[in-house]
Length: 225
Ligand code: CA
Image (cartoon, rainbow, N blue to C red; front, side, top):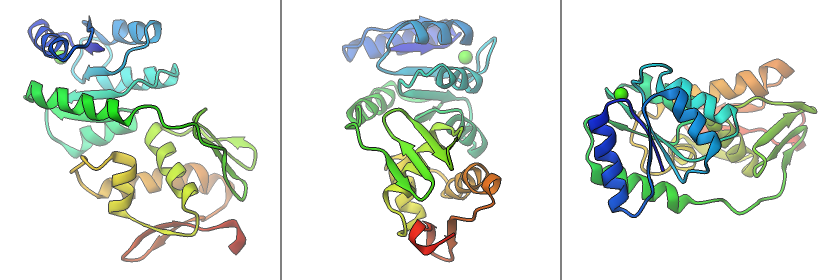
């Protein structure tokens, strides 16, 4: 595991707690070193503080994902604001904890991420001209590769696994943010809009439909465009 945190005392506390759980733990004192270590080593998970002396945690997480580092990331945020949560998730984090947090809770969250494990390699998903490779984490519309954040990707994957079905906000949160997410369900509306801007708007489509009072639905290709 990698702990990216500049405050020495906090970093050592987290390191000791994770070592008691049987993990080997490296500490990076800033974002640049954290990104470098994580690209050089295959960590089981990364604990990433938002407040760092150089890059902030959001930028560090974006750089990791851009470098194809897909280890689970838990962000440590200083305050419990929806803005920080959304920024963290949008930057590609898998989970977050608000300081001060209990070390037991951090260990439990890391176990939950580890249990999620590597998904079985699925086949290519397709609906009309939308295509998605879950294993390679790539997606295309009409042959154009889509640049999606990890959460946008997970959301598109969910729609492609259930074309034509109405997905409620709670079902989407459970699938994309996992059942432990207890934040605001507006996050679903925000992410559906992000996704529409990437997969629909540039192609003159309106395939992600709002089903009033229920949720969202990917219009199947068979219904015509
Ligand atoms: Ca810090």
